[in-house]
Length: 295
Image (cartoon, rainbow, N blue to C red; front, side, top):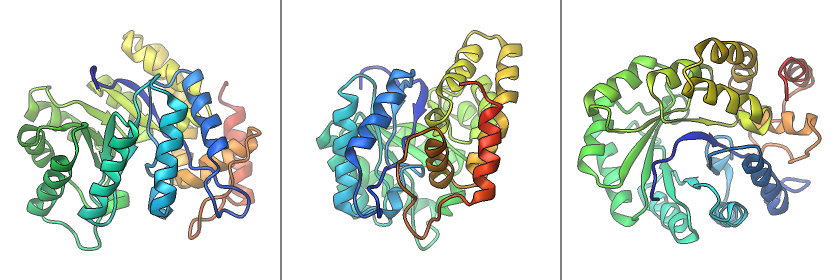
């Protein structure tokens, strides 16, 4: 990866065939193509939106291959390669690198809460196994593990290919602390959709989001307005987008984004159990929210 990733890092869902037994690679390619055509600056499969925790290893590899092929080197690909064990995280990260991914996003997942020493060792081991950059993904709401800004910056300083942080706590002070401790050297990315305006204004290098699946132009408009320092316009766009951003997070990204795509005419299958599709009331609410947000 020659240039640092910046901008809208779009997270596609993982489409399933009817019955949910297989990954629908043709539909995945269509989703990726649409995200690129509508201006996404990078594609990040197999994050929380992509249901990576519910895929077999064969399915994981299939999604990696299909995404990299569909992107065809037009924008960077950041593969979510997290798993419960360090060994399988390494397997996934190595597969992503071999397939042509530009970076690996790693979330520390563990049944037992990890100590700082264990967190650092986990990333050290993964980094030693691959050559591509690592985006450290801090999302205690899903992983149960919170990586402090001090540890994030320590790993950035000590581990060569730890080069980026996706901060999803929704706490702006964490981003400020990362920036201060690293002297602005560690790129951080906003992973909390409702926080996006404040995070971009604080200097986030990009916005990691599933929202472009439903309203790509609005997301790009918001990012461009902040970059142009047109804060009034950015605030107006954010105010319009905010109900959608809050809804997709509160309802669970796989369920809400898949329901939204279905409402927009793209059937990508249901989330995989134990996740459930959005219920009728949720679909009605999402329909109303989308109607209020320009395409």
